Image 1 (tube, rainbow, N blue to C red):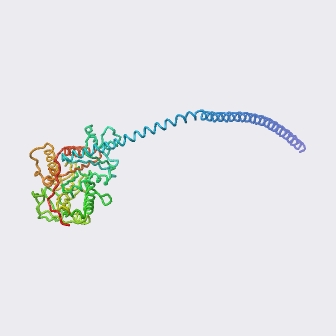
Image 2 (image 1 turned 60 degrees about the vertical axis):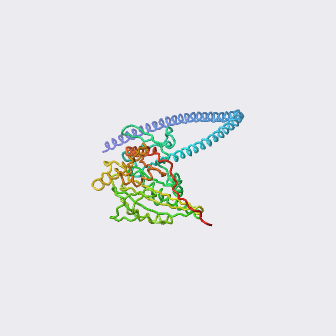
Image 3 (image 1 turned 90 degrees about the horizontal axis):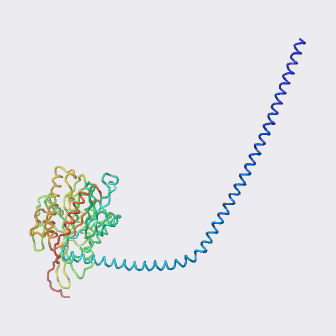
Amino acid sequence: AGQRLKQQQEDAALKEKQLASQVKELQEEQEKLTKQGTAQLAEVRTKLKRCGRRILGDLEKVREARAAVVESAKNLQTEMMPAMKSFYQPLKKAIQRIEKNNSGWAEKYKVEVAERKRLHNLVLELKGNIRVFCRVRPMLPHEEGGEGTSMAVFFPEDNRPDLAENTIAVMDDAKGTEKVFEFDHTFGQASTQQEVFDEVEALVTSVLDGYNVCIFAYGQTGSGKTFTMEGSDTEKGINPRTLSRLFDQINERAGSYSYAVEFAILEIYNEEIRDLLDPSPNKKLEVRQGPDGNYVQDLEKKAVASFDDVIDIWGRARENRTTFSNNINEHSSRSHLVLSVYVRGTNNSTGVGSYGKLHLVDLAGSERLSRTGATGDRLKEAQNINKSLSSLGDVIAAAAAKQGHIPYRNSKLTHVLQDSLGQDSKTLMIVQSSPLAKDAGESLCSLTFASRARTVELGQAKKHTSAGKAKAR
């Protein structure tokens, strides 16, 4: 037992010695690592100090360079200012002289353009040409982004300096060709109803003075004819504006003149004349010749004393007009609509009488049958519409060629409008066009027809008056 205890004590002493040796090694390793860490930390600090000094030096150089630039700019401004002032005054005076000269030439140009327009209109009036306006409707919301909805009709303001005033160009993508047309006035997509009426208003006075006047809209279905002629509740068209202005002028002449006004509305549907004020199915209407020119026998005429009277009658008559839908227009007019105003006037001082007629015509839409999708009764309607419009084309062509015989009787439309398409009338055509590439073919047909109509010389319009005796005062 004593020997085992001794052995255990020796083993414990050995282990203690080994542990002490390990502790010493660890302490030495710790001291070594501490020395190495301290040295590395000192080295890093030294490097940071060097970098900091270098950065501070660079910043100082930047400040010095900035100060030098500012100083140079000040010196340059000081040196250049006198030269700039001496240059600026002569330049300013030169610009003012140029502006003054340009202003003078601009005024002269405006005067020249106005005079040329006056002389042009005078020549047209003496010749009695059918005046032709062209209006292009805007793209409609449901057409945006669709097939064939790129623009095909261009005006001078559409970055086309090659186009003269009152000309338009139509691009036919199918043929890769472009055709230019000239009219008496053109109205772009942004044109307003008021702008159109401003060019038409003078004709109202002509009716009161005893002239026959006809304004009609022509173009394919959906080109905007009815909008231009009738308009909407918020954007009145030519018809309501013209009739309103007519009664305004009658009121302005009250005291000097006395007027009696009658109003009638008819439509030509399937080559039959329908009285929209008396739409009796058994009423057969025919065109006759009378002392005041052509008239429709038995056509109901209403005496009207104000624009409100006209609106009341017009509203009831409009409900009787024939409209149906087709592939081109959801609510397409299937008839030619003619609003007629008959004005008899008397000069209260001289007793001289006058008689004028005003026809406002919204023609049914022209279109190729393949585009309408029409069948049955709708096909018959389309055929009759195209037949009457073709007859209108024949009359225009014969009149343009100054032929001895002009086929007015080939259709009810041309027979009714004979006074307006023949001599003794002031006639205005408004050709309507779509701006879209998919309608370019129809647009070209309409514009070509209108260009041909513009060459027709009706002769100088005559005033219809009757002699009278001066009234005793």
